[in-house]
Amino acid sequence: MSMPVRLDRRRFLGAIGVGAAAVAGSSALSACGGGSSGLSGDSGGSGGGGDKPNLSVWYHQYGEAGTQQAVERYAKEYPDATVKVQWTPGDYTSKVNSGLLSSSGPDSFEGTPNLQMVKAKQIVPLDDILDEIKSDYTDADIKSVSVDGKMYGARIVDDCTLIYYRKSMLDKAGVKPPTTMDELVAAAKELTTKDVKGLFIGNDAGVTPAYGGGSMLGPVLWSVGKNYLTDDNKVDFTGTDVENAFGKLRQLVVDKSILLGAPTDYWDSGSFTQGLCAMQYTGLWAMPIVQKAIGDDFGVVAFPPYSTSVGKPSTAQGGWSAMVSAKSKNVDAAKKYVKWLWVNNTKDQEDFNLSYGFHVPPRKSLAAKATKLQSGPAAEAVKIYNQYAISGGTTWTTEMNTSFGDAATAIVRKGKEAGPELAKAETTINGILDKLLG
Image (tube, rainbow, N blue to C red; front, side, top):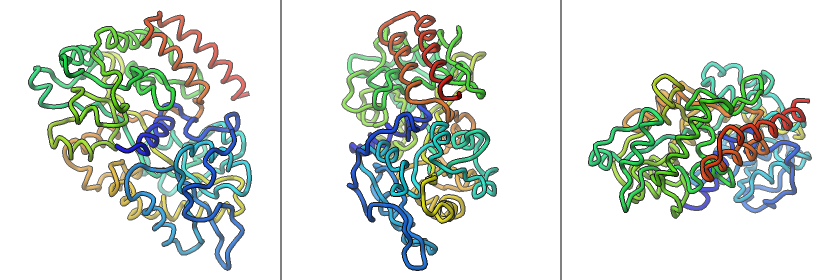
């Protein structure tokens, strides 16, 4: 997998785990880091061109070949405006944060809506263009774009995370795919040999959210029926069940059954396809690469619940949404374009989600008839996504995630006692919440 793919997945993680971090809000605004490299059109802004408005639409650089050409083709086909695509390699987040401060930024852009952006009046609600298809979104999708009851994003792609397991390795060891955390820990230990580790969850043991790490921060909570915050924005990551779940992750470290120091991180399937691990936590996007490398010698399962009586299976609700900048000179035209492409244009939505890598089309009706997702592990992934996807919410911020990740790192990697570490994070995050929610 190429470097751009890795960058893509890091931002994907921001969308699913950090909530607000994919495109941070006003408190995290920083200088533009991306310049204008990657432009396929001009520098943005919308001054009008003849009878049609000009629209500047911004995307981060997807790793899958053909994606840039696809969105440029969609833009060219749009009849009611002159749409110029800005395709941004590198630090897309900083570039968008800067662009949202003025009318010279994007008219529409992709990212993840969050409370900070709404409070800063950087994005506009899209309920008027989304209401007609709202019932065709999953509850997790609706939650991922909603702030204070209003929807601020039209879903472009949905992604989910899974545990991939190598059938031949599990069969040889007499191990079944894990259905509880205890089974996951036991399977990882049983599958570990001198040449192969049982499980790969990231080179950070899944708990350090520095530039893409922290794959387990959500799953460890979801395994016991918890989340980062409750629906009414209270800290939800404390308690005995959470401490016990962290203990299972710590056990993986103690058992030395997880792969560390891999050539690439967990968003890249290379460690799995090269036989460095028997199981790997990674995304649906990796499935075409895995299929090409090892054929049908793999299966997928959701991240398991803590036990048969506590928690339930889970997968992260990730992906990207199209938003409209409140600073745009053509807000209505930008909303019309978003509606044309990401609400009504199911042909292009299917093309973008399935022709360049595997994603779940956000509209349930479209996902249901996507032939590439109707058999084998891909079908199982969609089933898992529809049943168990969990959104990190739109209030959780980068600062909160850093504090929680510090606690998780101390517990899992350093063996510190869970209760006090989580309590410290709770105090810090309550302070952040007080400022954010006012």
